[in-house]
Figure 1 (cartoon, rainbow, N blue to C red):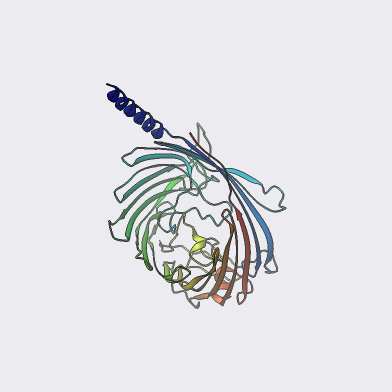
Figure 2: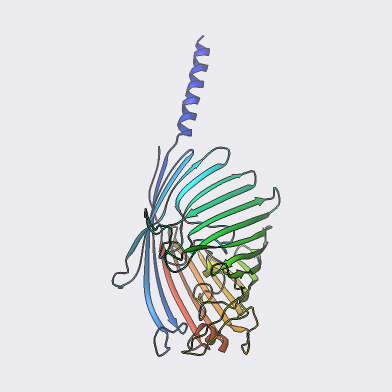
Length: 431
């Protein structure tokens, strides 16, 4: 009898412990302080004389509060970013604020402001290099399990909660009016191979006023594949854009592809090489300085990598897909690069990369080559939550670069930066 009582008590204790574990709550509070300084010599002219030299410092602070329990997670990230000394430059916002419900079967629903990152972040990514970074107000529904991931992303943006005339979206926090995205990823079992498919339908505000306002839709469809054995990896992606522009009078027919190979012979050094091709408009108007060029496109062929982390792909100096070409259209881009990294000691990583940059389309009386860019970066982990990094880029531009980008001193473009990141965990608790 006593043995039976002890057995029952043991079962009850196990059930209680199991119930407590199932209802375990956790709360984490973290801080991220990023200070970033830059010196730019040559580039996009900022005054009437065409001279371009700038030196400035920027700061970004993020406070993260993350609550979790079984079936529920809620996160809030407040962000403030500014240029040192600029009057009125302080900008505080909620970078992320979302709640997520999930089941043991792998289903989830996440709603609120979210930083989205998919595959290599070429099409959808937070672009965290930029101080403001990117986040989206969306409802995300999905399933993850047994090697499969399926996400549906839905967004509908308005300027204000108007009861009248609320369908015209201008000067909002997002570049699109509405967006629907479907992403599917599969990891092959026992094989280091993963593949993704992506479909986006993006609704942009058309028209200049509420009276002539309309929505113009463009679609993006494509895929991403990565094969990564122990010492090397290969990546490939292809995307195509379709849809209409200017009240349906202009079709969109653009595409891009990318390939990348990486080799890691040892833990402390490696090499990489790759090529990006983004299609461009073949009727690009290139007016002379001070002139106005107007051209009507029957078809837009310039690919737009929409909401990706552009800084990490097309050269660190951000001339492409961060800043625009003259009068808005793009002749596309060819980006061939090669590089490597080396870790001489614990915590220190040094990397270098060379880019050959050229336009993708044939333009009358214009050579395709834009320039040659060399980048050197170093990162050192001072302690577990403090990291110091620096970089230097040098570009030898061409006459094509000056003409299409209006870049001064195109033969000698320099950019250097220094960054300090401090990311302590302030508080953690489980109950």
